[in-house]
Length: 298
Image 1: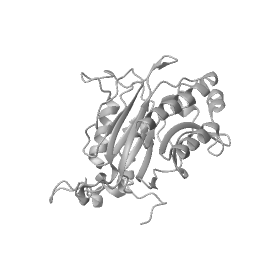
Image 2: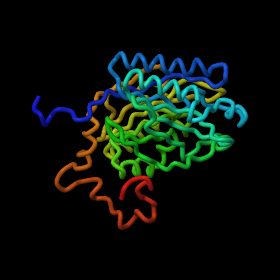
Image 3: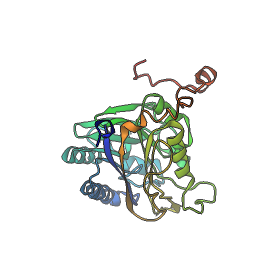
């Protein structure tokens, strides 16, 4: 292979789709199930693994008291420690969602671990439905985390309905967004003739218009009367899925072999069309609040 064609940031992504169930009696099983599937992904060569939103607790809490009982702190929580140890042991990168307890506040949070420890932490900004009854809206903005494999952003579920979220990450140079989800009910029909849900298309659109990768892990199953939609996928910088889109019902792992550096020249489609350059920031940045995250250099 010519030197200029060799991948600069080769990654094998694995998004893991399974059925964590709410209830303290299921907590250990949820954690162990996610780790078991992650080990399977490792055996298939994955080095970036994405678990769903609230991967260790299930989703459908029926009270704040129950949500609080399921939550754990960012520092020293048992699931967080287990994920950190897994990433260190296997020398890979792992994103996972959990219910975070910070004092008396609860957050729907995501963490990103690498071989060297925790690289990222995000709190869900856009709370869906009854989440508002127990979780506090996220207060960390939309940071992008520098890692040895590339620049990684985190978002959670309902966030993908807000185009500002991936756009702000793209403006900070994100190569990939790990999207952790519990996609549930949307206005019918839930699926189109191809078997895809609306969130699949929102993911593909966000990847396309921001010219980056999005690895979206969703859950399956039913819980306390709610159905989860599956359809996990990995979208490339031009929007289309890389490999399969998962079914609505099956536990599975979706893989993609990518070079994350490919997201960087992707905005330049030809000599006249460049998505980043063509943005009319003079007309809408101030109105929409498209600004770099305060932690990023200007």
